[in-house]
Image (cartoon, rainbow, N blue to C red; front, top):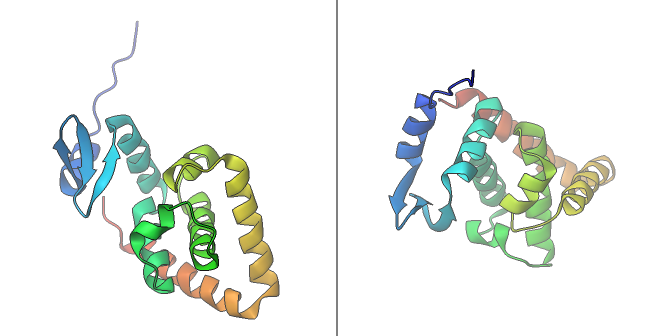
Amino acid sequence: MKETVLPDLRFAEWLGENYTRKNGGWYHKHDPATHRTTAELYVLFKAGLQGIESRLIDIIVCEYLNLPYYRLRQRSRKKEVVRARQLAMYFYDRETALTLEEIGAELGGFDRATVLHAKKTVENDRETNLHFRKIFNDIENIVNAQKFNKKL
């Protein structure tokens, strides 16, 4: 006998609070250029249940580094954009249940090797660069504070 899966009512509530449905897709209320399918949103929702919502990591990193939010997902090799993206990838991996492939796709279509490289770069810079260590610790403290203030 096939087991029926009941829809997660918290997912429906979260979806209604954060997204609007237009033209067959879902658009984030604060970032209308972002189009997602229901399946993609369910993955993001499940990741948020296990840690912190990935979009919140983006906001924390961009606000701390004074980087416009949309630049995080741009294909750019500018140092400030790459550094912010690497930090976001590191915290995505640590705080969400997303796979490396999903993290790369979420942050601009990168592959899993790029995410692994970003994690190693952040870990190495944290150990060797005092200025970066301060940035990392500040962002880590903000992420940890937000993790305990989340509501679902």
